[in-house]
Length: 269
Image 1 (cartoon, rainbow, N blue to C red):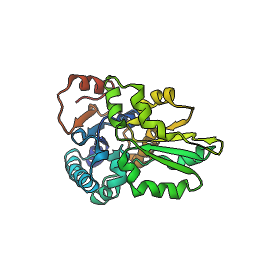
Image 2: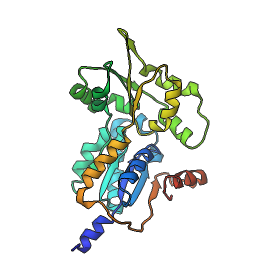
Image 3: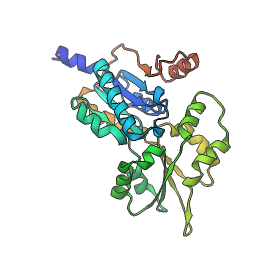
Image 4: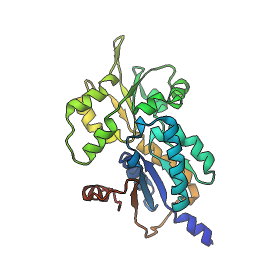
């Protein structure tokens, strides 16, 4: 028999966090695999783009923000759908909240190394993720036999937000951000590009059209959602709770266009 405490835990939301709209790629996959979970999407858009923040300032902000979020919403699990945030603060967040399971997002370097035929891989990321020691450690651990090019983009997350909101993004703007991903060496070409920011998959079809040659664009969203399923195990909901899936933005926007966009993802603002 389920106790009241068990029911309370079962009905708590799964919190999915990102700096902006990029984590919606993960939310979409999570809803597909866990259709009965109540999902709470939290965007720290007041700090966007976080890839430009000084590391100490960003880490302090994330720890303070999650102190409030976890106390207020009591999530059964937290997904950090942001490479920049998780590679910087994931370990500290887990230490600060040992009773809350965290699912992180890291660059998909291991699957890229397993998938490449040419041995030439590029990791397309924010400047913060490119700088992170965590990223270098992944390369050393899983792709030491490959040539891995780290490409830090200052603008792609913002271009992705513009694209998602229906604003014009010119091909030339995208070419300028992704061109360094493509390397030819000894008759071989880059054949895998890791999308190491959850914003970037929203532009993947655009990337395919403007790329100088075909490559595999690795989107981490499905793998993140599968890890969430494993983390929840017996605590996953098996029937609708009746609660609405919601979105919380730290800037508290009153934007009808944003509300319509979120409605398309099944969220109320």
